[in-house]
Image (cartoon, rainbow, N blue to C red; front, side):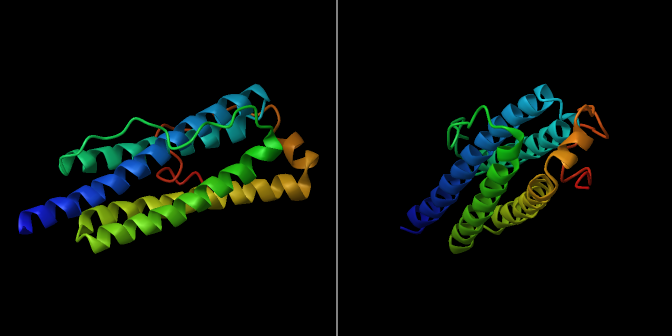
Length: 179
């Protein structure tokens, strides 16, 4: 019976890891879609930052997949939701703020599932990722606030910027590119 209980606990953790992975896969697809659209709208600087955030989400999805494999599970390749396409620049950042805020709430619940099932390693993974999701949320809130408060003046300043402005391939949270 003890083995069954241990197996059940492991399966509970694998389940939330796969749900989180599906959320990350959705975020990757959502943010890459926005990256392409922002680039097409000639807001390269914003496009570049959103791309870096998508790279962070790729890293998160990979961290979840690696932990799922360590626990003997099979990582999902399903997206948690459909990608919202065709958003304009005024819609993107409030939408993404809500997405990140919801993710943080859900991941805190998943962290608690890990605690209840005695998996401190997966708890640490969720803690790390929650910290990075908070960085994303702060960025999206900041840009959304600028667009709301400054409107066309802010957007005009960014229009025509290169999507390669200050970019590397390490992602957003890791590179310290939150400014």
